[in-house]
Length: 199
Image (cartoon, rainbow, N blue to C red; front, top):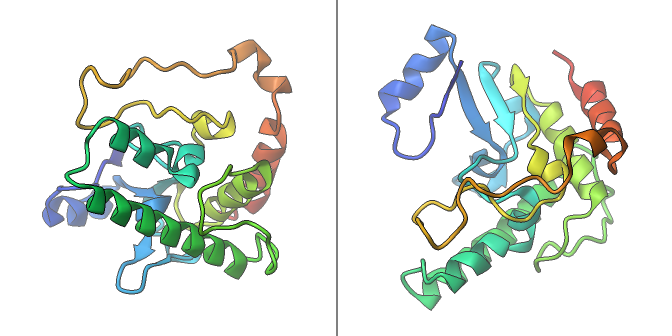
């Protein structure tokens, strides 16, 4: 059982999860040392947890890296001001830099990696693999991989704050089930995750 202890959940709920053997929901982009902005190392994830790159209410990893979710919200006028939108872009660039730094600390990308984390660009299969391996190293009892990320999908399942503006809960995976075994890097990612999990 997993408790969605995100957002406005009271602290009492969070404190009650582990004693009741309910996994905490740990999403990469929220697992930060907030006072300094760095991302937590895999060893800092709690044991009684599920770790994952995102959720149905968040952008896919590809969209997150390219700021496509910010573009979408701006297009739909969901930001209170252009200043707030600009602030979100600055924070996202900082997140990309800090994710790269976290991957480098784990030696999952070369120290001289050529990824320009300051500007939105395509994620790429190597970086996707490194991020999945990073989470696979975590102490979390369960790791979940989102199919949308493996298929490099850019449209998120649900965009909170919208009803008709976005096709919530209606986007389909771009690859039919029968083609999964031969699609891209699925098998190599599964093997890499299996090799990193030391539980």
